[in-house]
Image (cartoon, rainbow, N blue to C red):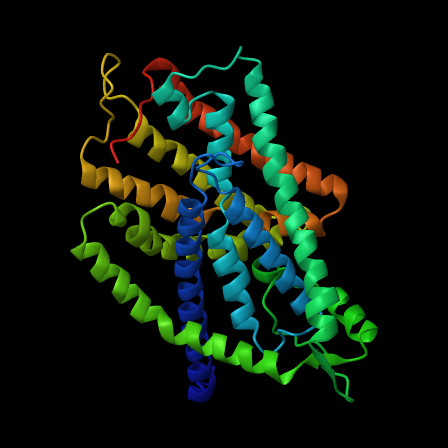
Length: 375
């Protein structure tokens, strides 16, 4: 094999570009989810807080927009940016494991508010209604947001933000793989003919270029910034704003690696995303048990009873578990499957994850009890 330094340098620069862009969007996605959750936590709220419903809604809408832009080949020259926005930002902004934790806590009457106020359901059968309430609202809002985003991208952004060019082109063969960005080559070719070879207006091309360069350049400054802030400030910000973003980087790359390795094994069942969501749900159940589980049956002192340890566990829950799992990709993958395969994928993912929460968090809650965390 002949070593070609030009090709090697090109691959190295590409990998660095992917790493930096993906890192930046993972940090921004995690921070955005934390901010939206904090912003939507108020009294009286129509949507009971804390919840990731708003984050899941926003991420699915953005995912839908990006899918339309990519289907109409707007992102053909910015595939790394497309990967960063969809798998990185949308994946980190949404959270499957947090949704499952909400579903479990509401269906078993174990939310922080219910424990603090000693609130009880009329009877245990109402847990089924709570289970379905969280499940249906999250899934329907997320799917509706994805469809709305795809139509918004197609009927507004592409329709009014395109400029014609005379020479048709072929979609590039080195596009981001389906497991990362859900690229549909047939849809791309169909849409090229439908829109008569339109390309983004100069404003959008320049915007994509600037955004791509910013994401590339901000990766290491953001990492350094959050490391310094995490080391300097020892208050609540460590568990809410700084550490989650650092944990989110590792979680985002793990999710991407799982998708790259396993999604292509079965086109009817995205195994990589399934593994990421299930593993994140298992971890969030364990971390929640450690943070909220009673140390002794007769006392309300939790297992983690130091403030700093509680902040670290909170960061693992919202940062690592929240970013490792994703609703935006989960919903988008189901949208692309046939209806029967979508039902199988959704049912197996949700049922498996919920059972793991019952085994881990539920068994501890019903034998020793849960209390509110100290942070």
